[in-house]
Image (cartoon, rainbow, N blue to C red):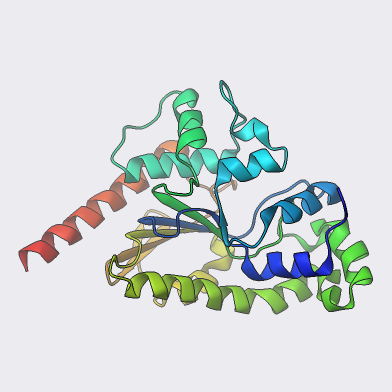
Length: 264
């Protein structure tokens, strides 16, 4: 595989958002995609993305060699996806998945699909092992920042975030506003995960989230319920059953709001 060009990297930073159906009733917004930091893997991810803002999760991972996440039988189940799937099953009114095979089936068939019921977005475009500056991948700071003058901001994670975060917040705001102004209306639920980015979540939502469900904060704007929780794979995260309960709680909120609107 040929090395990715500066133009491809810039396009990826500018236009890649995530997986699934932007017209779905549920959006899930995280901080950034996780990766192991391997330069070849990162280049493969970017070269296979293309110009579309959203990809089908299964098709894309097959194209980059991540077949283990969507293969028949027993696919690998990342902890983050496992928690999000439990949330989505609760939101869709489905029973709690007691068996891992039920979660894996959802992962293969429903998570981040092009015409499905959910959309997975990332605040920051470039994948990284963690948000710690010390874990900023070598290919960004040692190769691309030196090789391409226009990408010199990749030398340090802090510089990258200062350059990219405000633009990404505005772009996701614009995506959301376009949805809200469409005939179908905005998504019913937007789940943000990663409390360290909560001020960014408020900016995207256009409102502060002042109500509480345990450690989770939530609020409503228009027909959309916005929810903020800790990173679902973190030490202080909700357990899988709690994720399912949160989804069911929001399902009831959405149903109650819809009923009241009908009766007006």
